[in-house]
Amino acid sequence: AQSVTQLDSQVPVFEEAPVELRCNYSSSVSVYLFWYVQYPNQGLQLLLKYLSGSTLVESINGFEAEFNKSQTSFHLRKPSVHISDTAEYFCAVSTSGTYKYIFGTGTRLKVLA
Amino acid sequence: KAGVTQTPRYLIKTRGQQVTLSCSPISGHRSVSWYQQTPGQGLQFLFEYFSETQRNKGNFPGRFSGRQFSNSRSEMNVSTLELGDSALYLCASSQDRGSSGNTIYFGEGSWLTVV
Image 1 (cartoon, helix red, strand yellow):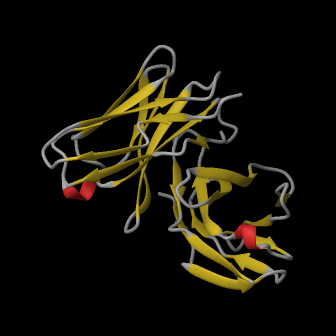
Image 2 (tube, rainbow over the protein chains, first blue to last red):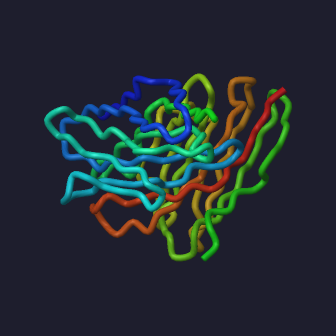
């Protein structure tokens, strides 16, 4: 069975500072990895994904994540955050043929002025 | 292209009642899945449908059921509502192009409050 762990439930950071949101997964088979963002009173929006190939993936708004198979991690990073990045971020894993995602418990990113 | 549409967005029900939530996927998407989101349990997978067939089901009691229609629209039903069923119910759709890691796209959800 697969599982996802997001160790940090809340991460406060000052505007323009860098941030890393941690995600570790457990799986006995190959996985696909995703980061989603949820703004208040909204559904989840895809931020970026790793399916195969290059282990470093980027989003259009400056976030990046690196798949590390040996450490079973998929940490999300941004070199300089903005107030508008304040939201909850979810890491998720999926495997071929299961037709479902397993989500982490989420990390609330609070960007401070 | 329109996104995933869920109706109703907000509803309040009484314990013991039943509720039906509706989801219209993105045009061309044939897979629809449902998730329950609560502060305590996070996002939990309910079930997934493709071409009117349920392909996977999460660990929820039989009071939770769903179906998919020939136009890929989906409904989920919760019978004999309990206070603990209060949650945000999220629908997601994907194209499902095989085993290549299908990306799912979420609707804004239906907020259910059971009193």
